Image (tube, rainbow, N blue to C red; front, side):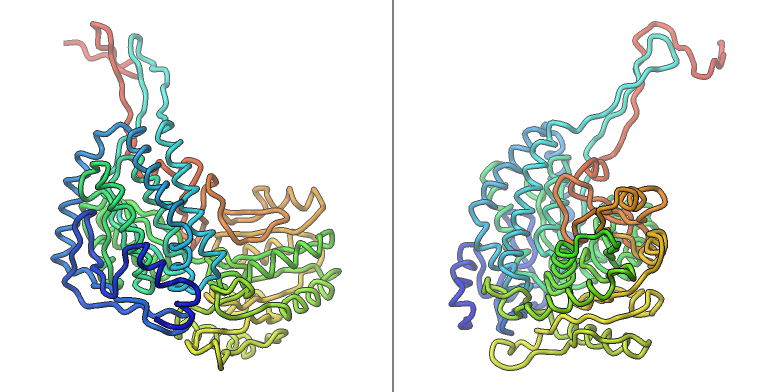
Length: 517
């Protein structure tokens, strides 16, 4: 174990989470097994080996899907409030293990410790939401046109839900899906990112222990581990009616095509290319805070990260100067050290993408305002630490139209009415998060109107980053259209059924049709 790991209690955290040097990456709950190759997890914080996880083979997967399918048959018969009680007990364990799990998220993924704790808090919050929801899976009663008839609709558990999550939120996205799916009566199979396999094993350890202690059928919380080929086992499997996938737009298109080919359902949370519009009436101080955190938080590896800053010409120089000055105060280093603002990128491939983006924006005619670069020397041995960069650019640049998963912020100018800024903001293929900074009521309302932002999330006077449990999270266009973690997102995990009951001795037909025998 490295000095960093020892100094910040990683060894103790791993023990508390039940992790070993080598771990099975396949589980149906109490049962753990894996016969695939070992995946070594190296921390981007210090480049050191954290542990290994064995990947899932086709044979392993068959055991998982069979167990999940059988477990579902029993789990669905448990009343929803009782399923909610199990989720509440799972939540109790998350609260108890918040610190060690937050540390592991920070160490294995590279986000700051505070963000790691915040991610676990999201798990806790969605469980709270799910427990309440377990008593509110409401249907609808409507009047029938036929006398002596009652018509209503209800929701039933869907079946086995496949969850594919990404490295940047290695635990929260899983919980967004599972907490809701569990109270809806579904079994879940989770393929976490192969870049953060230990956090997946840790979460499954918690769920498996709680479920076993409470007599939950085997197979309701399952884990599979590996690269995209393991994910394909689920996307191609007709026994999995719903695939919830979080990741790149490229990945999402492949998943959508595969699942649609078998007429399955998908919930897709894909790329973002998020913008903040800054109007002449904006509060500059709040703008800077929102833009900087949005651009550099999680080292720019959030799907809600701020990628573009669209500033009115009247305040352009002032905003540009303030943001550039703010970047000078950013501290880059070990994310477990709470004095630092920005940790590393996930791996060296991400570093290469970051470098290519900075080269590309200059090639296309942009001007770098805050120089990027890869950091070297003591504390940066992993080779994954980079300097957050800012470039003046045009919205039509190819690199601006593309989402770079790194701390690169593009700043651009707009003139005239806010509608001109909206054209720029909406002029990308992605449609996840958006924000406007203004104290002008008309501009704010225009931004939120049918003629305004085309994104799934539209904020006024806060940044683009962050999701709040209770509100439906997701976006439009190439973001995929899915919704998670709030509002009526629970309905995607269930099947809808319309029922008509005739309580008379007659059989009238609808639409006044006569069929006399």
